[in-house]
Image 1 (cartoon, one colour):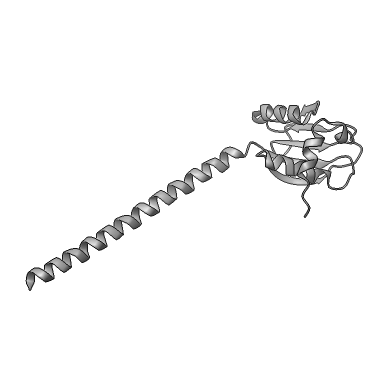
Image 2 (cartoon, helix red, strand yellow):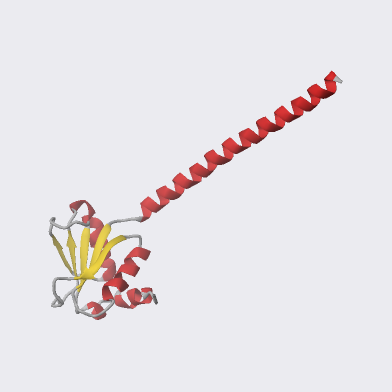
Length: 148
């Protein structure tokens, strides 16, 4: 009888230990997956950007923002520029560490007007001017229209 009780007890203890180890290993692997996902998200964000409507056409800043977000930029602010008299679309670089990223997006969007002004909050600002329809990139950007 003692042997049967010891046998049953050993099976119970073994089962509990196996379940405990399985629980520990599942939690550690899920945290590894979580941390690798966070690393991928952080690698996606290229720069912090604000997009300003400098032409006066409704929704144009949102349109460019949708495109930039899909390209991995962290668009933190979308608003009107101080006025709607911008003839040309501009990039204003506020963080010199992000100058290459700003130049790459300028090339990608076909923006020729780039200047440095370190007084901004974000890494760089994009001011959409009245020339946005003439930019080669507009045909790509207009596909990022959000219906909501």
